[in-house]
Amino acid sequence: MNTSLKKPLITKKLLAMSSRQRKITMGIIITLLALTGLILFTRGTNLDTVSTFGLNSGGAAAVQVPDLVIPSFWTIIVLSCLLLLLGLTQLIKGFGSHTNKILGLGIFIFVVVFLVWATREKSLNLTGLLRLSAVQALPLVLGALSGILSERAGVVNIAIEGLMLIACLVSVMVSSLTGSIWIGLLAALIASGLLAMVHAVLCIKYKMDQIISGMVINIFSTGITGFVSIKFLVNFPDLNQAPLFPNMAIPGLANLPILGPIFFNQNIFFYLTAILLVVINFALYKTRWGLRTRMVGEQPRAADTLGIKVERTRYIAVLLSGLIAGLAGAYLTLGAVGRFNRLMTAGRGFIGLAAMIFGNWNPFGALGASLIFGFTSSLESKLTILKVPIPSQFLLMAPYIATMIILVGVVGSVTAPEADGQPYDKE
Image (cartoon, rainbow, N blue to C red):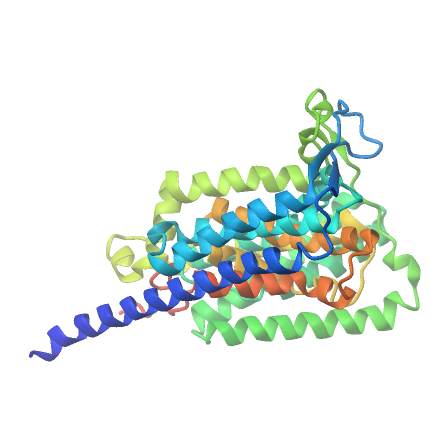
């Protein structure tokens, strides 16, 4: 057989093997989650126990609604059996192109089962938990959007963690010095944008390995922020006391039960993120700029042939990526805590990249993944209050465990831009 004919056959066989392995892996994961609910969570749960979920956020002006009270034991049994059915179906025949959605559904069902078990004979404010989840997901959404913009143009940007970290430091110091929260936000965007352009120059002009360039920026940001924190912020605490952006309640909508406190009584970062989601999704798929950006990330040589300036398009994409990463970093300080702590990004940039992959380089797909990560992050504080018999170390690990499970589940099911990570040499 001709060698040129063998290669497509080999590739097809490898893809088929990867698909089968992924189907089995996914089925095993979902089945294990179901067995955990059936075996572990039913133990010690009496038939007459109930779980109470509060639907009113404390201190909110929203319309009050009754609490949700459900039977603990039977809810665990029914949902775990449904999860087991999903797992066995995945093992036997799979769900084809809907596998990622089934994984997300399976994780959601397991989380509900876990919450019902954790709140048996107790009460949990569900609206407060969902509000905290949205807040925790916000920097992850911005990190994912940052990665999407860069990688859609063909430049891998794992420097998002470092860009966020440098924005955290600069936003606090400038806001503290000037007394203006807006100047601090602007300074954060400028700092992250400049550092992103360093990454762009190294990758696009000098064709440095994009992973190495990103890691260099991450290491630089970690080192410089740690040095400034120890050398200056510790000795001059006034440099580390920035004001916070206040919450802005949207009249009428903020009074809606459940949804009002979660979505319509947030600070400016929340609303900016919602706007950016819509704008970036529209720009990527409905505008000439988006078409050119995606073409540069898929077929840069063909784009060049059509007169599209590949390098300029990539520079713009990486710059926009850096600005959004800076917005995420500024949120962690000016929108959340009002001060800088060393390594305060805590891997959120990398989790944002994981959300980007899970969402198949699509803004709204990344949003769904970010909400899953944000929910697991918010669980830790709530479950500590409920005194759930799980070591706190395991609760702190929850977001990263969720990241690994999701990445294992999506391997082989998503497709990165074809020229992602590849430098372009104009002939």
